[in-house]
Length: 97
Image (cartoon, rainbow, N blue to C red; front, side, top):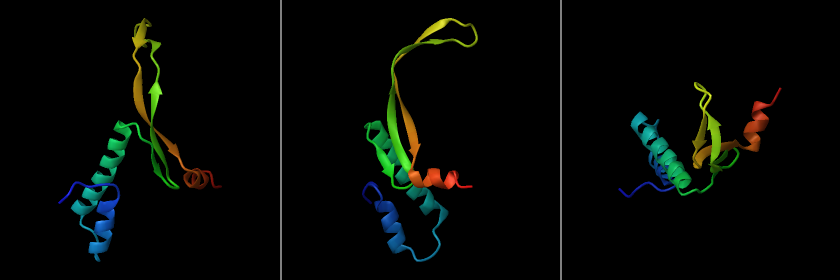
């Protein structure tokens, strides 16, 4: 079986199965999707799930931090961190009253 790519595992599963999915199949699909998102973030790509949100990487510049225990100044190196921004529909749903 070829390596999972994009949403193909979901498409294959939905077309082949006419009954409730097995837990292992669901786990494989979720793992494939999360793996694709992780791989895209490792390439510094932006991943958009329409209506849900956007996964992206942000760069944190080098800075001088502080050790909370001793209060000493510490140099913090530059790094990239994952970030998530919610989509419009999710924000509207959460802020409904």
